[in-house]
Amino acid sequence: MTNIAILGFGVVGGGVADLLTKNIDCTAKLGGDEINIKYILDLRDFPKSPFADRVIHDFNIIASDPEIDCVIEVMGGSHPAYEYTVASLKAGKSVITSNKEVVAKHGDEFLRIAKENGVCYRFEAAVGGGIPVISPIINCIGQNRITEIRGILNGTTNYILTKMFTYGKSFDESLKDAQAFGYAERNPDADVLGIDACRKITILTALATGKLLSTDKVHTEGIISIRSEDVKAAEKLGMQIKLLGRCIITDEGMHVLVAPFMIGADSPLSTVSGVYNAVEVIGKPLGNVMFYGQGAGAGATASAVVGDLMQIMRSGRNYAEPVWTRSDEGLLDISTLESKHYIAVCGADLTTVEAMLGAVQVIENGKELSFITDKLSEKQVASVIERLRASGAKLRSSIRLI
Ligand code: HSE
Picture (cartoon, rainbow, N blue to C red):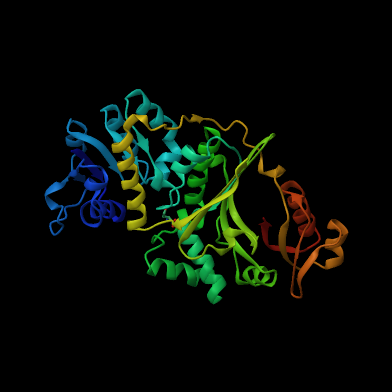
């Protein structure tokens, strides 16, 4: 019998309890080993829940109970998730989490403490919800030289962008829809400002490089400035706009960023719509592989959490966990990243633009001038924008192409 405690009985915690008790016979799949939910820690009581008798409010009961083998931390946020994780690992309990915030901030420390205490720290659900991506990168792809990881890592923003493209809705209308369906939080900042995707690309970068970057060093843009004019311009080019997390690794170092990108129909990422996520990994000699599926939601996230639990029960410490070092070494300044750019300006004429850039691919040349540049470094783009401003033009939008 494996006794577990669930920290947090919200959407994900409820999904984990349901999955373990209703949906599958884990015991049979584990060759007879049973899973018992001994405690559920939450600030609230749940008198009508079938798990009401397991709900407790004092974490110390869990930390000091030698019968608890594994703690499932699905509370979200940094505190007290950080303190509870450290205490659980030090008490010899494996920890599984879906909490990307705490993994991106403290994953290096948790993996070290887990190792020192002969237990596991696993976080499959922290990136891509139900998509198996962490474990395959560690177990199946690690022998490759990874040159890029790029992905649609946030379901809420992908849902909003899909609405803008499919139904011609504005950003504000699409956000309201996402809130009505329960995808976006009432305060949607972490999603729409790219913060959630930043945490996820930081975790993926650590898997590829062994270095856990400071999230505040990762260039992060959200989708709040995307307008219907940008959507129409992308459509004219047969492209989509997607919020991507990217980690590009070269001999010089790595560029890591979160930003909206215009992507062509030939990229498999362009077909990922709604709340779905996808992660594309490019490596040598592997080539490209893509992981695709539901990036959020109770059932999908619980699937990843329970998968981690069953993996620990099957292989325990024989499972090879990564070793991460907290370091920003090798992180290249965004100013050196080269891409083609879509630029939309008001009050500029094509002659002035082409005098600066040579021939550009014009999309609109009316009240607003929009065009695609050749490959330019961010530094060059900044200089062009500055010169356009100095000539009296007003930049409305600038989006990288992939
Ligand atoms: N807010 C996140 C998203 C939840 O929309 O993708 C899953 O991490």
